[in-house]
Image (cartoon, rainbow, N blue to C red; front, side, top):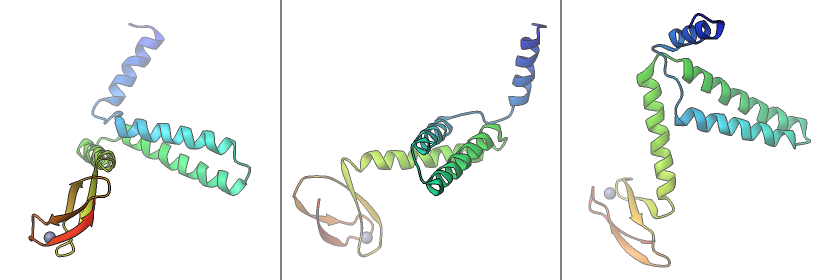
Length: 132
Ligand SMILES: [Zn+2]
């Protein structure tokens, strides 16, 4: 492995040791940046293109920063936050999230079309009626 590419590969491996690398959040940001860049090709307004270009640049810069970052716990925390938000978004199809009027606790209730239900807050016991 003393070829040019072999040495390049070893140098890259040494450079990436102790760094975070890539994950699902980076891939989503990269795909979003690519999509926004493609959308901006079809826009005629220069201001809209500039805004999309700026958003794309910020996404790519954050993506590169995360990939080469040595602060692995912070990057893992960001990934967990993103996965939690994604899970919450997916559960909105099947569940409603209400806030208790008594204590502002978030309560997750399964959706049923056109049904009014009494919801009891598990934290403070307040009962309120919502269409779920
Ligand atoms: Zn409550």
